[in-house]
Length: 266
Image (cartoon, rainbow, N blue to C red; front, top):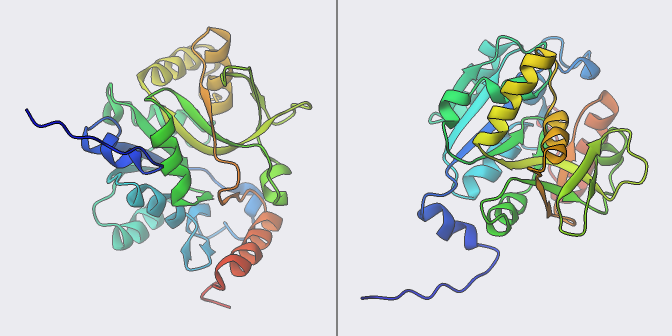
């Protein structure tokens, strides 16, 4: 018998992926992006140019860099434009239409329940730019548990102004989440590891609230029924959330400082 000794590092996720534990990812890109008007009147939010490519290319590239190639993008608003553009950049990616995209964001997760089946999956936001290191840390530290990547020391205004705040207990289990929390410890980066129980929870909350079910509500409800998400601390790694026109220009400047790359139209 041959015994392999694996030296653990922040790239342990590669070994995990080879063992087939986490291979699927969902990218949410169905929303209107109303607060980014007029930029999103003719262009889907996640296709807005940011540095060297569209905003959605950042989370997709981060997933690919981590070895996650089974990716499905949930589309809604201006779905034809989004699908046509992404097919040129990423021919292997699949798409799912959420025709209830006027609902809250958890409905987009429920739309891909047949794709998820019983497998764990990574969830990222099409309007959150993230570094590949965030996905690496999530997959190397999660132990296959429901997790949310959080930042305890956000510095960019776009991370905090409209950020979703998180409170965890001493065991790292999330006990509260929401935009209006005052004594918060972390900011939600929009990167999750989820499982079938999350889908089942969304299904239940839909019976109570219709399509007005947010991801934060799902996380909070699961904490209340003692099926909590754990935090995965990615403090210090690059990420940015773009919700408003001000965010867009602020993050674009930040990227230029970090990489020296400006928008191709500039």
